[in-house]
Length: 374
Image 1 (cartoon, rainbow, N blue to C red):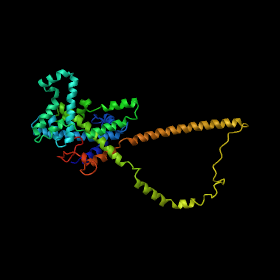
Image 2 (tube, helix red, strand yellow; image 1 turned 90 degrees about the vertical axis):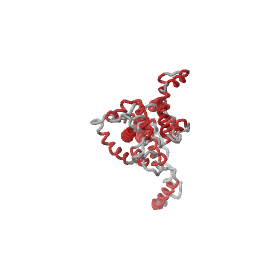
Image 3 (cartoon, rainbow, N blue to C red; image 1 turned 60 degrees about the vertical axis):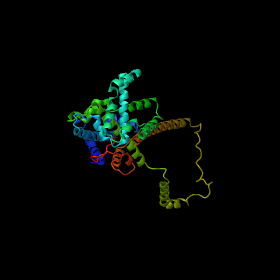
Image 4 (cartoon, rainbow, N blue to C red; image 1 turned 180 degrees about the vertical axis):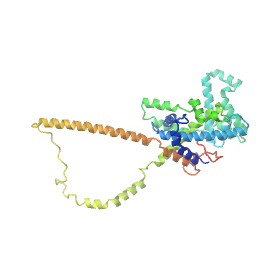
């Protein structure tokens, strides 16, 4: 099954799943996904339909990933899905595997800080027990067991700049340039949201209790990270598609075509209108209208009524302009947001090896389905 087929199935079930949320499965991440999408580059108020579609795609991807990880776990005779099974699935995409290894290292550092390990006791703690770096040691031992060339182990010490992460940070910096303090506080809070902070809800969302081989705690951390990375990559690709689908106003070829069409379409009108112009520019027909004079002092009541009428008209005009600008602002905010068709087109392009998104396609295609995050 290809990702485009899986994505199409997820897209076709988006409406039915969203309409059946109240009657069936109530656990969803739509509101959280809207917040995540805003922090990743979408509009300040992402569209609900787009978030529903993103949720269905991410859910479909993670369920397929869990099934394949369960198969790997069963082949090696394990009773639970562990980090080794997911690392095995990601072994062919070096860039994304390196990104995951950095995340594992970050989780270990965070655990040390939360446990309050002091700097002078750090070396002694590491020499006596491996609990402080259990995730990193687990990943290192497993990669050492399957790596014959040393290429995978070298990823743990690779300090190369991640272009994707760098681009996301630059995009976030551009988003905050025109924000005030309240908007920046909202944006900063949205960037801290992740699936890891809602672990029990995330487990219910994946329905892990019904699985025969269940993921352990470290595997759930990795799955939550991959879910967020899937959302991030969907936003990345959708923004590329949105930019590609936007009209190119600065294209000289388009301007040349439009100018040619205008000239070919309007010559009779110009020929008809040209003789009607007066040859003498000083004739009354061609002179501008005279400047209106204020009302005379002999009709004071009429002037007051006119002034009152003009004031009411101007107030109504201003009110109409405010309403029109408010409506225009709402339309612009919806237009700036990622639309569902941008997500669908991004998934369609991602499922093909050729095209502008071919360098981003997954290297793991055992079942023909490329994962977005691994």
